[in-house]
Each structure stands twice: as C-alpha cells, then as structure tokens.
Amino acid sequence: MLRELVVLKLGGSLITVKDRPFTLRREVIERIGRELASTGKPLVIVHGGGSYAHPVAKKYRVSEGLGEGGLEGFVETSLAVRRLNVEVVEALSRGGLPSIGIPASSIAITKDGRITTFNLEPILSSLEVGLTPVTCGDVVLDRVKGFTVLSGDTTAAYIASRLRASRLIYAIDRDGVYVRDRVTGEVRVAEVLSPGMPIEPMGASGEDVTGGIVGKVEEGLRAAERGVEVWVVNGLREGVLAEAVGGGRVRGTRLKP
Image (cartoon, rainbow, N blue to C red; front, side, top):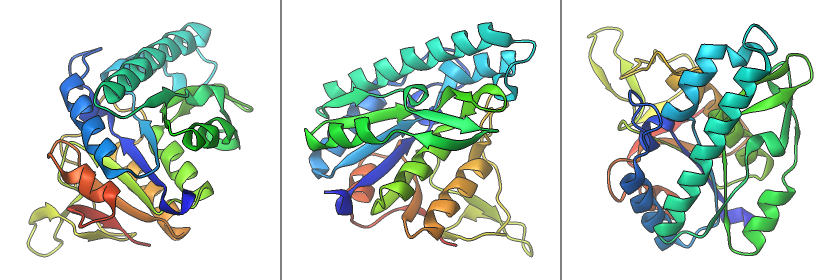
C-alpha cells in the first residue's frame, strides 16, 4: 500500500477565504473529496490553517514560543486549528472520502521549530482500515521554545519522506509556482523548479506565518532530495487533483533538486 501512497497538502488559501476569518470553502473541499475518492489511492492529507489559524497565530506571535502572548495565544490558535480540522474532515467525508482528523499537536514535538518526535502509528493504522488520515498545520510543543507553529508544508514533506510516498502534492489556489525571467522580466508558471530559481510570490497574504510559497518550495525540495516526486498544482481547477493523485499527467510545477 505505502508504495502507492500520496501525501496531499491542501493550502489554507485553497480551503478557506484568506481575507474573511473563519470562512470555509466547503463546496471546494467536498468536490476535492469526490475527486480523491475516485482515485482509489491511499492518501494522507495535510491542510493549512488559512483564515482560521493564521490571524490568531500572528496576533499572539505564537511561532516565537512562550512570549507576551503566552498560553492564551497557544490555546486560541489550537482551538482555531481544531475547529478547522473538524470542518475539513466533515466536508471531505461528505464528498465521499471517509476521513479521520489527527491534529499534529497530538503526534508531533519539535525542537527549536524542527520535528524531533512524530508518531506515525495513528496515520498508519488509519490507512490500514481504509480511512484517510487528515492532519494539519498546528501549534505544537517545542523543547526549546515551549511551543511553536509547525506548518502543514513541513509536516507534509516530513510524512512523505518518512513513509517514502510516491508523490507529494501541494495544492494551492494558483496554477503552480511563478518565476520571473531574469532577462525579459516575464512572469510565468515554471514547469520545473530547482533550487536557486527566482520565485515570484503571487497573491501572498500578510497573514501567513508559515513561510508562504517560499517555505512550501523549500520543504518540497527537501522531500524531492529524498526521492519523492513533488508537485505544486491548482486545487481550484476541477480534475487536477484527481489526475495528480491518480498518477496521471500533472498540470503544475514539479520541484526537482
């Protein structure tokens, strides 16, 4: 089963309306659930925090750990993430993809922001019984900072590398990763992106506390270096995720070390 495993990261800007706090794109997620169910592939899904978690995490500067926001910031962010995770699982399941929520804070611990402990057992056990595990970007306990933000991009790359997934797919609300030609100045979607190529942020939000497209590319390239096929695709376009997860032709940007 794991040889066919696909890890799918659903970006916060894909599943929520980024400029409207606590606003879910429910119809989009249900449609994604229908597409994914049709592929028959074993899946691990990770989603971002979007307009649920990022504004709260930024307000309390949770990524910096125990600071002026203190435990209040940790608790508020954690509650926002839990609420989003439940709603994403509900929408995916309504779309026909039986899913189970596994918050990252219950299985991961970091040290100065990097993962040191990650319990894969709940994920593997879910896959064994035919459920799709759905974890997320989250606030987690940290051995140096007390707690911090662990991004969904990092989590997705970590799981894909540990489980030797066949593909890691970052689904966003754009057609791929945009680059600017150094000579002509033209901005276009890169078919292939390698380290050192100039990335052009498109529609970047000031609320994103986890690195945006640059952080996504960095984490994806780490997984690609470990042998995982990594893509950035547009999850708003119908059929794209079914193609990408199903192992067919992929429209988007491939990350290659």
